[in-house]
Image (tube, rainbow, N blue to C red):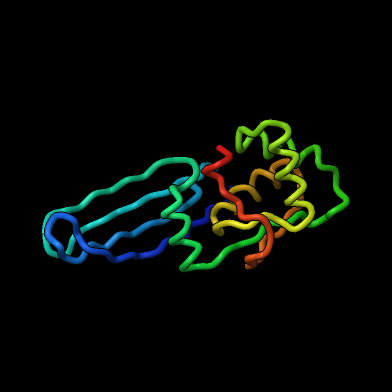
Length: 151
């Protein structure tokens, strides 16, 4: 089972006191599940909170990770391999219709899928569990993988 983690610290103005608010945002895989989290604390007042959940990260978390760490690209290692196990894995992991899974599989086969490192590592693990060989590279090329729209 793969473990992947990515995070970034962000600063902004505290809505309670106007002081400096520090937010740690991140995304990770734990025991085969995709997770995201936000921890925030004001440096000047007691304002603080923590939020974490399974599934796709909110767009603000994803964008912060993409901005800080760049995008990762997931590709099929063998472009001639059968797409049947790919379709099965995508449908199981993302709760996609057959048509949605076909479009995603075609993108994966042709140019790859791009997202946060954790997004693509999560999909890679599901595909590898179905004996599909994939590669992950640093690359902004290909359709942007947005798990929020799929799951």
